[in-house]
Length: 230
Image 1 (cartoon, rainbow, N blue to C red):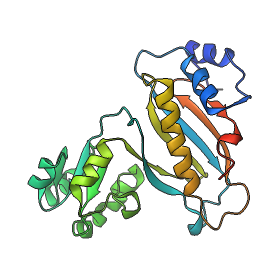
Image 2 (image 1 turned 90 degrees about the vertical axis):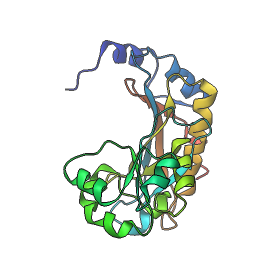
Image 3 (image 1 turned 30 degrees about the vertical axis):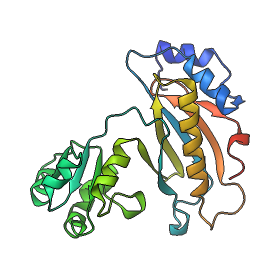
Image 4 (image 1 turned 45 degrees about the horizontal axis):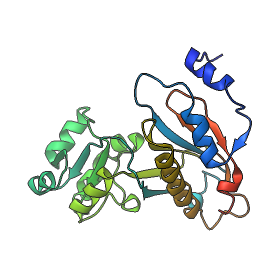
């Protein structure tokens, strides 16, 4: 049986975790939980009704957060023009040299961007990047010739979401240090983005449930009225 910390147990006992709350109230409950000694990430967790085994029911995409993610994002750009990418704000850039480092185990970056031309080479390390969620993808805006624009979007707080093999999605939407209003507005942006990413093949109920939590807290269930329009 999983053992939780005293802080977690205190938070869980302070409210009814089976109850569903309007988004504004759910955020209030969350921010009243005891805090950890670090600035915890706030996350939305979605349970969908889609079938993950069906290719036409994949749910993925990106959305900008109105108030950013609160996270410092390290960006790697796969490109033959490393100097231009570094000048545009990339933390790391290159092609063959960077790929060789990755093959040796180096993964000191959070997001990878690639030019379409560079993708011809990058695909050879897909088995390394893919499982880590670091493979550039046109659908997430990380395969593009507009390297400067992509870097700015990622560093400004654009987040990517992708359904896992159990039809769940987890998305970081900010930090505990954010104001309640900032967390609410970021949450609304993500709920709307995932709602609009509904596959056309899915009929009836799409989003089964949504909860909000911090790194070291229990989840607070959000009322279906906040997302049942999708």
